[in-house]
Image (tube, helix red, strand yellow):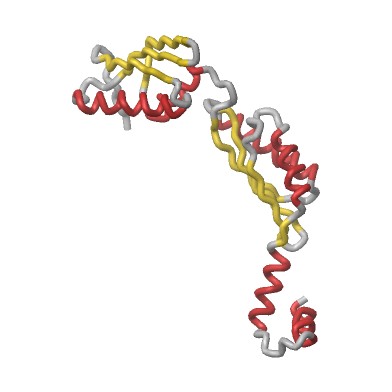
Amino acid sequence: MVMLIMIVFVGVGLHRMDMLMSVHLVRVLWYHTDVPVELTERLKQRVDSVEGVIKGSTELRTHFVGSRPYVEVTLGTPRGGSLESAHHVSEVVETAIRRELAGAQATVHVEPKPPPHEAPASSLRAVADQLGLRVHNVNIYQLAHEIHIDLDLELADDLSLAEAHKRSEDLEQALRRELSDRVHTGSRASWEVRLRKKTF
């Protein structure tokens, strides 16, 4: 292959083309060949159709190394699921890709995402979990186009009032982002709660 390209360069008058440039060009042509857009779209649709994958969450990149196709997939699964279920989804996706594109080497990255139309209570629990906070006595009201949330925020009793207020504000801001600024929260820090202890 290198010799063939060298002959082409000489034939078109590029006598000074360095051998290293020729080798580099061969690598570019041989190792980084993109596939047709139609194939990438077909694979993306195939991945989106797998049970457990959030529709429209799939990002996919396909290329060839030599004659072997490589497919890199990032997809979303409903958050709160187990590691076992995420692993199962990735295996099903790998199999689906190999059926669609024979000999493909697939790498699948699974990311927990909120599913479409997730219930506000599920969103609230997920946000609190991400922040390492515990909430209880949760009341959610849908009024017209707004959601009102009242809750008790469980905090360790050795926190200062400023620290407790900061945690409460962090939760409220995260909920506003999560629920597209439709949220009005009245979060109360409850000081009559059990102390969370860390065990090592």
